[in-house]
Image (cartoon, rainbow over all chains, first blue to last red; front, side, top):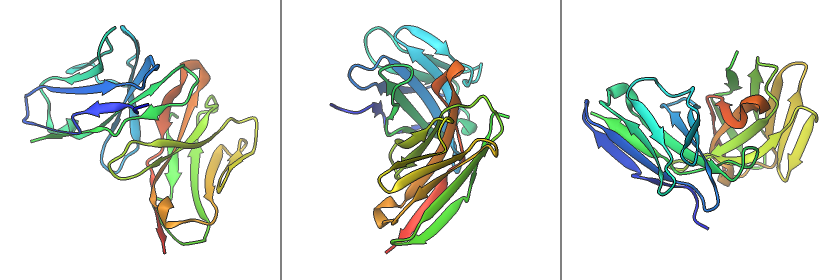
Length: 113
Length: 114
């Protein structure tokens, strides 16, 4: 049973470009969470999605950031017009149910030049 | 009020010693307190978790101590091993917003010397 798969592992973008981060949850998991980790800081909640629905996006910046989890395919975190401050590790996590164990992927390290 | 404060920032322990990491919170609505272990280049992995209806939980060499009145909880690693060298994060969440919407501490980098 493969774990939570994130790709790419590393993504380099220039300021103003778009970044697309992908997350395939564990098999049988329909709940996906995105967290962001800045250097020397803990993880910060961004968004919680179930299939085709955004449940809680209270941690996601209102502008330039969006997330989706379509019926088929991976969850996507999209950052438009990236700025240097977007440089961080972005972690996806999945769970089978709301109160069940959360499994994290290995993250995507985004670097904005 | 949503913060979880973690200390120390880094910790060096000799092999066989006890590693202790502390966390404090303000929001009394928090009712789930997990600890995560993260190795370089990997995502965090759940180590052990506690609910506020108990004061201590032990799993192998790992123990969480919870003090509800002081709003503090700590992780104790007994007989620390070099393989325990990692970054440890405490976290907290509440049932009414979802247990997996976690507020993380800033992490403790543990180094266990051989």
